[in-house]
Length: 152
Image 1: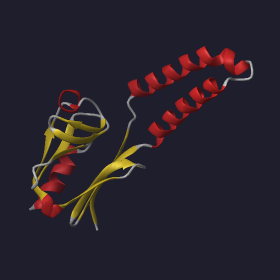
Image 2: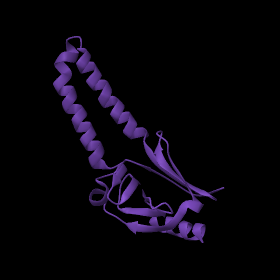
Image 3: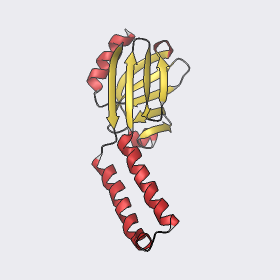
């Protein structure tokens, strides 16, 4: 039985503007080569940029809490399952994505591992083995209530 589920996407305007701008600059730069029959380098460059855009469009951070486990990861790349019994402490907190983890996405920083897409609110997990995992959320109040009830 699923107690909580959240799905987040990389939908920041600045990110998409940057991706579109880099693609546009690349296409303008490569246009002569593409127009003249296309060199393999030009064709591959356009394909790589298209693949990056498609990955960002499909990529989503999925967090699920069921009766005995929490699962987090970036679809379609898989993720991590953390069993309830392995959690020593869990709480919702404000954090600095750049300062603590060096940005957004799947990050390993001085504060542990983070899964985030945007914002600065997250679920901090401290595991019994000492590992620290932070999961970004866009619903901190709802997640706080679910975690408190889940862990009792």
